[in-house]
Length: 108
Image (cartoon, rainbow, N blue to C red):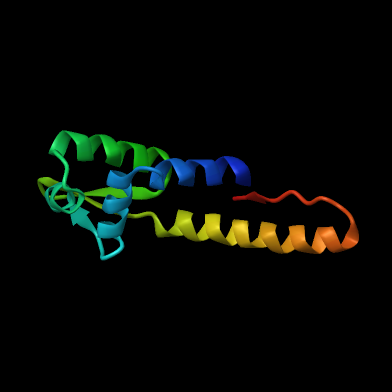
């Protein structure tokens, strides 16, 4: 189990850069090889590779080897768990305020 705050911080790091956000936008349309992400991000291949490494370390992106190339995709399972945990946290926090107590939420 992980602390929700730390996970939200990783999400912020992932989407907090315009190039990384453009990469994520491209991946929302489906899996893409690096060459397509270079065009979508309007950045050099080394820069896109560095941004992909950050996105992978944040858990936002997954990769899979297909023949000679690596194809990147959104890590939908992680994002769903993160957003579900966040929604649960907000719901319990609202409920806790009504009952006069604080709430903590962790995600799997």
